[in-house]
Image 1 (cartoon, rainbow, N blue to C red):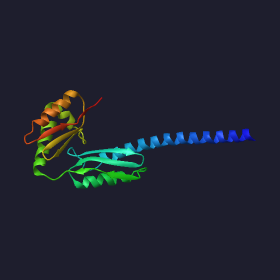
Image 2 (image 1 turned 90 degrees about the vertical axis):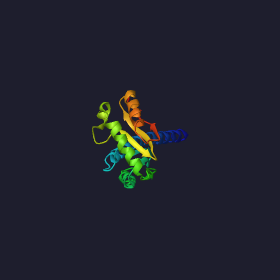
Image 3 (image 1 turned 180 degrees about the horizontal axis):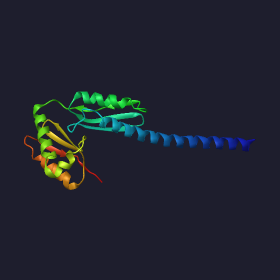
Length: 177
């Protein structure tokens, strides 16, 4: 009788272990699916442009939205697009709405022209979603996104620093591997 009890307990522990491993594998696949769907939904936002930067983190069923946007409606649009995804239980919207400023608007346009209309950087202008994000707040410029080479990253930095009335440029561009 004791050996049957040991076998039953061992079998039960084995089944519990297998179900835990299977559940972890399933939750990993579920989290990957959520990441893909969140990325897709954010890229499909109609007013998401080159002067906006939206990033996100997924932790289980919680999606944290980060970044900066020019339009307040884009902040709420991003949250609404993400909260309807299957598997998302909670959305923590930490997106910053940039304050309206005519001077910042002028800098945004000047930065866009300086970067995207420079002959060797025009390849980045193709497509709907631009890979280089230009964030301007209080005369300070932050560049986010991905470029093809270290040379392009440095050239974008030089071009961004050449725009008048800019107090400083932070280059957070990453080089695509």
